[in-house]
Length: 232
Length: 226
Image (tube, rainbow over all chains, first blue to last red; front, top):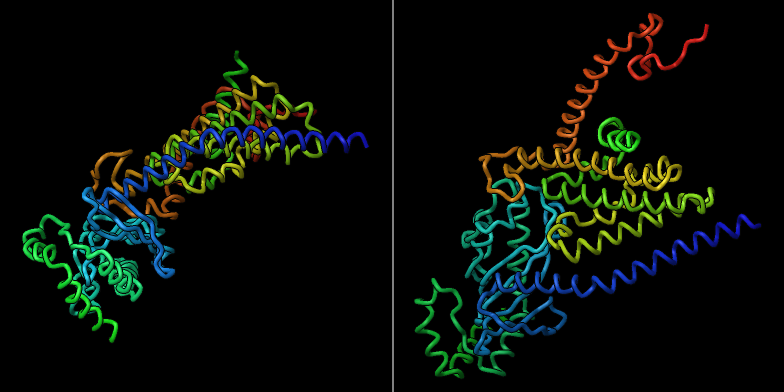
């Protein structure tokens, strides 16, 4: 009986001491851990859409995690969407920044986590694959070997991975929820499309000037293209 | 002093946990894809091993024999969680690359084996030295494997640029871990055998030992009757 009681007491006190010391350490390190996570996320966001200064989380019809990005002058510069797809060896989590045009294009794409084969599938996170997505709209995001309009080269030896991510991004960009959200957004605030990528500035600039002057006309213009899409 | 050195080098060389005793192979193979991960894992495991050895040795007379394993596991788990929090707070990039393997130090059999075989039977100083020695043995083994696998598998070392044009990708995949570990262990066994041969000549084994299976292990220590 005495032996049994001793066993219970010893195990009880060992567990209590362990729990108390861990709870102290937890409260001490928790702010630091959260700060690290926050800094990591902010760094990722600023890499993916450098113009943006302010981020606002919103909810769109049970759509994915969406964040609106505003620059210094409170211009609506883009949308960040977090999503994932099934790759060759497991889930590939990625984050994508898209423009606010009527037909959204990709500003930047980044892989957050993946479990692909090192040396082959793991090359999806390299810049020379992801940079091919830049400024492409949904109908261009195909692998070259899958579709004539495709503009994306598959990674050699990792077709399944490249196809998975290409298809997932394309589906994300052509979601009706996204179109509806962009349309509503444009109607309520007459947002002007700000050119984002420097190399494209020369092409886009004259267009945007007109847009800023005549907000209403563009919104009707864009509406037509959207209506076409909805009909389809 | 002599005993302390003996215990330390026992863990480091003579009874090296991974290379000689072949325990703790899971983190040894899984966390050695890059040298940075390997060194981080080595330090984390050494810290947990040393701390849990000390605590278990301090309370070795209070802990009832029947529940020693649950108590050891609770103590080891506490230190593992401490390491996990500290790494997450101060080395976020390391915690990202080691991922689930830091919490899995709990089930690293080196630590439980040393708690059971050494710390629960020896005093605090010896347990501390044993933890450091065994930890150093594990650290050196995993660091060597990590460096080999990173050089041949990714063509880099620590955070340097690629200096091999076409690295052998298999070396950072699981099969490469077994290959590299096998090569390292072969090398260690080769050196061990050479060392034992030299010892045999000095010790002048009795003629009866010729052909005995335990010849290289016992070196004539067992006294022959009659």
